Structure formats: C-alpha cells, structure tokens
Image (tube, rainbow, N blue to C red; front, side):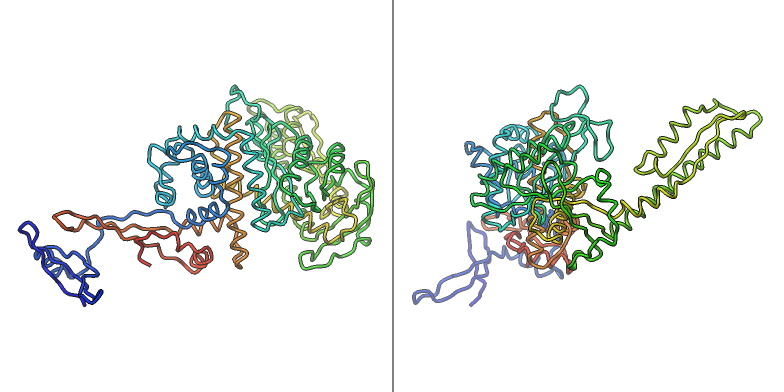
Length: 573
C-alpha cells in the first residue's frame, strides 16, 4: 500500500511517498521516494506539463556498440595485453589499440582529434578514459610498444582464434597487394615509404605497400605485411611465401588442403618453386598477351560452365607447361566482362578522338591565319601532346597518327585502325587465363575459386573508402609507427568484415559502407533535467537516456546484433 508521510528533520518538514508491506509479520517500508517540502509539491501540482530538459547531449551509439561487441568476442584487447602487459596504470596497450582501431572503423581521424571523436560516442562508458589519457602523445607512447615481433605474434594468435572458434573456411585463402600514397617529405628517412608505381597514379608521392592474406568469404585478414613501396609485388610474394610456410604449421596444426589464390602480378619462377615445396596449392592467372596461342583458340571450342553463379561464362580447358611444370589451364570467356571491356574501350577511344580533333582544329585554324599570334607549335611539341592523349591502354594500337610539317605550319592526321579494334574484340576481350595445380578440380571449381580474389579487392576498396576503415589520414613518419598504423587498419577491416559476416549469417546482406552509415545514425540522446531537491537540503542531477528513432532497416540491424544490451542503464526503453 502506498501512502505519503511527513518527516521533521532539523526543524524542516519533508514529505515522502512510501510503499508498505508485511515482512515477518510486521508492516515495513519496502520502498521510499522523496517528494520534497510542501512548497515543492505545490510547484509540481501547478505545472500543467512535465518538466522540460535543460539540455540534451547526443552520442554515436550503433556503430560503436556493434564493433565493440565484435572486439569483445574476438578478445582483441585481451590478446594484445597478453603479449604487451603493463602495470595497472591507466589504459592498457590493448585498450589504446582498440580505441585507435574503432576510430579507423567509424570516423578516421588523426590521434590529435581522437579525443574529440571519443567524447561524441558511447565509448565514454564502454571504455572509460580520462581526458589526459587521450592525448595524442599517450597514443604515440603506447604505439611504440608494438614492435614488429609483437604484431606478428598478436596476428598469429588472432588467426588461430578465427580458425578454431569462428569456423572460418581456411581451405581457400586469397593473397594480393596494394599501396597507399603518403605525404611523407622526400627528405624524411624511411625504408618503407618509397616511390613506386602507385595504383592511384600519385607517382609524385612516396607510398607504402600492403600485402594481405584473407579468407575467401568476407575477406577476413589472417596475415599482413607492410613493405617498401618500391618493391615489386612478385618479389614481395616470394618473401610472403617463406613466411606462410612457417605460419602454416603454427596456425593450422592439422594437415589441410589449402589453396592460395593470387593474381598475375605475383607470378615468378622462384615463387612457384617455393609453392611446390610447401603445403599450399594455388590458383593464379596469366597475362593473356603473353600466351597468344591460348588467345587464338576459337570460341566454338569453349564449353558453357554450369551453375547460377557462372551464367554467361564459357571455358576451354587444357594443360600447358607453365613455370617449369605441367599445369591445368582454364581459358574463360565471360559475356558480362566482355561487354564491360567493349564499353570501356569505346569510351576511351571516343575521348581520345575528341581531344585529337580539338588539337587538329587548333592547328588548322592557326595555318589559315595570315598573322598567327603566339609561339608556333613544333612537330616535337605536337608529338608530345599526341603521345599524352594516346597514353591509355590499346590506344597506340587503335589510333594511327601522323604529324608533319607544311609550308603553313604543323598538320595532324589520324584514323582508327578498325582491324585492330576487331582483333581486340574477338581475341582478347572477355577472356581470363587461369592456371592451377589442382588438376582434379572441375573447371567450375577453378573459376569460382579464383573469383575469391575479387573479395580481397573489395577489402582494399573498403580500406580506401573515406566513410569506413580508411587508411588515411596517416600522420606517421617513422617505419615503426607506419607498421603499427597498418596493423590498426588491418584489424579495423577484420572487425568490419566479422560484423558483416555475422549479419549475413542472420540473413542480412549489406555492404560495409552502408552498414556503418546506417549504424552510426543510431544515436543515444541524454535528456538532462534541472537538479531536483534531495534529502537534507541537497540537490540531485538527473538524466534520462533514449535512442533516436530507427527505421525498419536500422531496427533489423539493432535486433540482429542485440545492441539493446549496450543501452544506458537509465534508458527509457
């Protein structure tokens, strides 16, 4: 039974709402709530509406809670701290690493801006830290603890956990390499940041290269290597193979039939010699123009492959001696790939023709002028311009150009080589040449096995996506810090890929970029009210926590990931 009672404390009268119940045969107060003085109760009765909050605070909730959950399941902090223990002083190395990794996943910033990002997320209660602990120097100090040997040991233990506890399919692994440009000054000493063939065409900048070994499903990283930006991929692949031979015995204690998938940029005779002396099988690709006899095989000799995933794909199978051994070779022709290549060729060709016509028109206009202004173009300067226009792939073969001197000035002539265009369309376009040592595999299995390589390309695109898991900004200049930065980025990709995989297992198919966008839109709002009177003349601050409204897609993600368990204890649900 509820009733209101009055208490006199130091001459002041206070009122309470109490709940009574029989306990051991006697009436006892089992619940008591302070109401205030009589005037306080009168003010509440005079209010026609509920009190309004004095202010609100918003915290990013969805993405932080989801990825924090994955990190907990992975035991990421625990594993790092096992290898890098420290005295119980502030945050551990593993906790600093987790903060940096989550920041890479959700809103990549510099270490200087990380504290500001942290304050706007629910990490303030999931992973509490004092402002002084989030200074950039504290991050740099703890990054310094992560030596190359420690990173390799941590990665090995994480890979073992993925294979043993997460049910990762390790029978087919994909390897590839990419690079990231940096703004490291030319005069800054670094063995890793070097100039090379940059995939983003930033040849003016130094770059860092990354080799990555992932599972075929959801590109889960199992091994990575940061290496100099000027080292060729094929040379690095040989170094990686030597390390993978050791990693095989450490991560895979039971004999497994593991197939490595990699692209043609990693091919070398020495590399395949190393593969033959390892536990690994392989599926690779060849440069088509280096095997003209395979391109000459007529389409009527190709056979349509079976399966929904291989609709529109034909293949020709044979054996050839490749890199000193007999290999199974599968030449595929893909209708979708063919159409895309033709469209790309025509678009590039038309763009070059437009630029050549503009240059030709400019030269003709100058020749017709009685007194042309400016410096007259020379044959050498026009040839340089033509060469720049026709630098794209196949354009030099498709476009026949002629630059000549006339009495009135330089003349440009050009035409399209239709015979060469038809040759490209009939012999090269749509074709991929695969080879493997898995002679007992069907052509369908070989083609599908190689397609796992595209999953890794998706992972690289994720690492270069400004919205999630972005490599940049990389405000580090020493080789040790660059390696740690690379490790954080790879771990960020792992968390995101595991999150995507977890949702796929529950029937939700979603890209990483879209997933992060939708989750980070789920925010936790703190409604802060003016302090209310408490007992003995004191006041008590109060806040209520609510989540922002969710649409059906966000609600499905929220429920599938069971994010309700991370709501504030004072939440209105």
